[in-house]
Image (cartoon, rainbow, N blue to C red; front, side):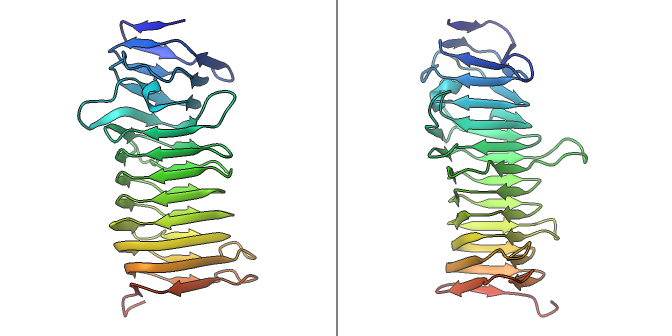
Length: 274
C-alpha cells in the first residue's frame, strides 16, 4: 500500500526481517530505515520531499526517485548514512542505481555499496564523512561481486575505502584520511582532477590482485604497495597526472607474483628523505 509520512517515521522492520515497499511514499518528514532489510521498489516517490536516515542493515533501491523528489539544489544530508548497505535493484533484479547530483550523502559511520552481480551504482552527488567519535571511522566498502561502482561527485571521508570484485571508478575529487585498499579481482580507475589517499599520513594505496588505471590531474598517496598478501599480481597503468608518494613504494610487496607499474604519462615522485 501507499504511505503518507506525517511525522518522523521508521521503515524497515526489525533485524533479520525483510520489508518491501511497493506503493508510493508522500510527505516531508524524516524517514529512518529500521534495523531490517528494506526494498524500495516503487520507482517514483516524487511526492516525498523529506530526508532519509539510513541506520544499520541494508536498503535496496530500484531507482533514485525511490528516495523521493530530487532536491532543487544540492542538499548535503539528503541521505545520512550510519552503518548501512545501499544496494541497487529490487528483490528479483540487480538493476542500475544512479543517485542524483543534488542528493548529497553525509556519513557518520560505515557505508557498504552492493551493486550486485551484473548491476551498478553510480553516485553523482558529493559524499562527506566524519564519525562523531574516535571509536568509529567513516569508511566506504564494496561487496565482493562483479558489479560496478562509479563516483562522479567529490568524496571526502574521515576513513578508508575497501573494494573486492568488479570495478570501481572515481571521476570526482577524492580525499581519504586512511587508505584505499583494493582486494582481489578489481579493476580500479582513478580519473580524478585531485586524488589524495591517506592524508592521515600512514595508510595509502594497497592493492592485492587486479588492475589499476590512473589518469588524474594531480594527487598524493601516503604510500603505494602492490601485491599485498603474497601471490597477488597487480598491474598499474599510469596514463597521466603527477602523483606524489610520501612514504614507501613497494611493487611486489610480499613476493610470489609479478607486479608491474607502467607509466605512459605523468609522473611518480617521492621525497628525497624516503
